Structure formats: C-alpha cells, structure tokens
Image (cartoon, rainbow, N blue to C red; front, side, top):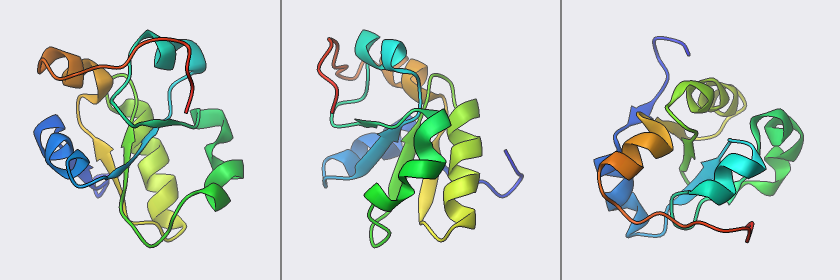
Length: 109
C-alpha cells in the first residue's frame, strides 16, 4: 500500500452500500463463502488484473479483503489504471466486528 492509497472505514462503506456501491472482494473463494459483505463481487486478487474490463470505470469501486492489506494493493492497482477506487480499512474482519450483516454460503456472485 502506498501512503496515498484512498481508504474508507467500514462505517463509510455501510453508508455507500445503501446507495448501491460496487464492492469487490479480492479474497480467495473459500474466504468469500465463509462470510462477505452483502453484495460484494468476488474477484480474487490473482485475477483482478485480467478481469478489470468487467468493472465499471464510471462509478467508484470499494475493495475489501480480510483485513485491508490485499485490498490496499489492489486499490493502488485500480487507481493506477484510472479507476476511482477505495480500500476498506479493517476489511471483512472489521465489517464483522462492527456487527453488520454478513452473507455466508457457496453462492458466488
């Protein structure tokens, strides 16, 4: 993560989710099915560079992982290629600790 990585808190993510924010979960499929932010689209870190064309450049993207490390590096990548992207500080772990809804199961989005 660079010192300039755009970052938001889980509280800010909860606010933008109410408006239909685009959330990308960069964890591995097994982590995702154990619990993820509602509406988050799974694009594992190792696939993101090759799948950027699937993402909407006209709207902000919010990138989440387990704790914020992977999402920060992937946010840096997205920003460098012209996306308006933000890493979620604390990641899914922070989301869970905040008591917010978590989706579990094998249904991948």
